[in-house]
Length: 244
Ligand code: FPP
Image (cartoon, rainbow, N blue to C red; front, side, top):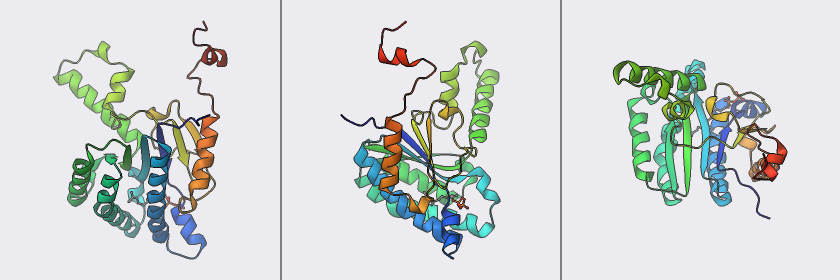
């Protein structure tokens, strides 16, 4: 029997700093190692037929870290954008980015556009890099833009429904995540996707991100395949399509 594969997997890559400190290395070493893990996870996801892989690389709340670490993460992101896009393009991966771009440096914004344009027509898998994102920010910007349309474009209040709100979120073109994974043992959402995870299965791994490997990813996928996703219904309704 074929395993049920989640269409969209979203990951909080947590624990880089703790992993590095544990072995007497600087926190930034953990982030560098984290990039190697990203490469592997992308390849494994392609093999598995996952259609969308979202990776949270920087939260809007991460600006309050020591400046040197923020600078390092920005440099690393830039470096990865410039050096990996050709390989990803060859692999048939379409790159997209969710988060507030306008707060990023002009150079990063430009490199994001180059990566998106280069890979725009690829359709094997979407690699969605979640960068300078927070769930509260996303909902706030959607509310603002909907309000603008009500005031300036005569948008009818009664036409605002859940589908419309979803379209105004920064994830508008993506399906909601089926499987969420957070590494490092923390069991919280930390202002990541909020609206989008209403029916997502949540998997928490005790491994830190630099330790996350195919065995652990496979474990999460097997766990997911055994979930019964009811979307508010009861079990019997899922078994018999015409159950009333
Ligand atoms: C969480 O670990 C990780 C981050 C805040 C950054 C994640 C970034 C990468 C894996 C590399 C950069 C990504 C791209 C796409 C270039 P933490 O620092 O919060 O670890 P801690 O909880 O142990 O402190």
